[in-house]
Amino acid sequence: MPRRKQFSINGEKVAPGERKTIMLPIAELYDFTALEIPVHVVRGQKEGPVLFLSAALHGDEINGVEIIREILKSELLSEIKGTIIAIPVVNIFGFHNKSRYLPDRRDLNRSFPGSKHGSLAARIAHLFMKEIVSKCTHGIDFHTGAIHRSNFPQIRASLDNQATKDFATSFNAPIMIDSHMRDGSLREAARKKKVNILLFEGGQALRFENDVISMGVRGTLAAMSNIGMIDEEKVETTKYDSIVAQDSFWLRAPNSGTVRMSVKLGSYVKKGQTVALILDLLGDVEIEVTTPEDGIVIGVNNLPLVTLGEAIIHLATVERLNKRELKKRGFIYPQADID
Ligand SMILES: [Zn+2]
Image (cartoon, helix red, strand yellow):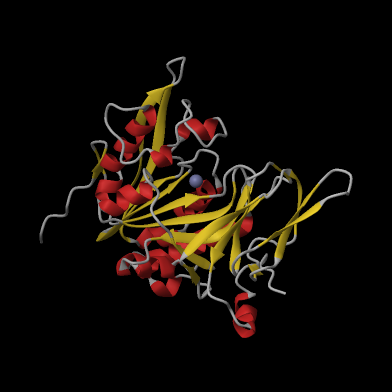
């Protein structure tokens, strides 16, 4: 028999059939308390894909932290083919501070692929690429909306790559966005290393949202069965028949004021439809915000106070859907509103 390939992270070997937690040291706090990123490796007895699951790259986006915990508890992992590398909290500094950023206000997800001698963000990115991404064939990175913003559960991926598209489709999210790369993102850096990577967005920062978490868990297990890591028959899949959006844009406040929303996450809106009202305090002014295109509401600002130009609603552009299609899609998500 050929010898099995050795697998190690930060110099610590993980044998076939072994589960192991490995701590990646990154830096100390001001009082020299060591700070480390916990990495949990689950290596199957049989060879197969190597999948990383990462969350809280933005330290306050924590639905994915719980998604990963639930996946690690799944009995299905006892007989996986291949290896899972789970990193529930990548930005450990931000997580402790309930903040998106690192202590110097840098955004880790704009600092990839990083460098050995750069800022703290660049160093963490570099370490993550070296110890995690370079060992993987696949990856799923979990995010949520930023503070005061909610995102409709969605997969963002480079759908022009067929293998990535198949992996993304198998996740069964209600909507997939063929999204452009963001400079400095983990997704871009991983894609350049030929890793099939998906980004799951759902819910808002600093919350655990049950519907988003269960969708993330189901989707990840379904995607794992798609690439042969777990037995297809053992995975419960909900087929959403994902809508594919080619693009998305934010509707911005045409005036400062308070806001009343007329649509919810998951709503399908038609060109010219009023989606929000900007109001003054005494009832003299009501400014309608209308949409210039048909689309699906994939993000909303939950804070009803805006200044001129502030993002209010994130719309994914989709082709006009007919009534039957809308009815069918009406079941895609509990909050979807398609009257
Ligand atoms: Zn994020």
